[in-house]
Length: 256
Image (cartoon, rainbow, N blue to C red):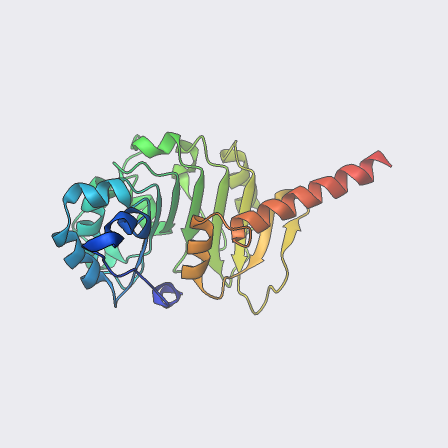
């Protein structure tokens, strides 16, 4: 599962002079990094003023092929990120350095992260970040098999409306889902990503139609970019439509 998060990555080449300079903020608003382009981005960071990246990069995807140390350099420069995919194995490669100083100050509204890294952002029961009040979308990735995911910090995210659990081959237990739903008072959509070979259809959970089961995306980077652009084809949009359609059908059924 970890390997799925390192493929097909792209970053626009820098344009440092000439008439293209005016396009730079648009080009760097969304940055997706992997093994082939991280060095280029770091060189570009050294050629532009620090405030350029702080003010320009709003959507950032760091794949598992980005090293922990490079990830912290990039996050230290891109301090205005609102939509972050942090798929770096930071705990495995930099075990003695906390992630908190790099992610806590960001003005996040959307976050995609592996579960142990998400839990590491809350080292104590009282830990809160500036973005806790405003985070609306959370995508939790599981690199190990879990059938009863426990995510205690969810109760510190009062604005959370969209939650996704990438459990791979596992279906979560009903008690676990019910616990998550009762914890997240504002939740509108809970996506459970199942293995694409076993779950070809998108369906709602009849116990609570906010829960949508979807096949695992064939290309997670493209899927993340689609949601960052708020495309109708992205998983969040499709899940919202499925929930709306089910609610409308149920309302028609009860009114007849």
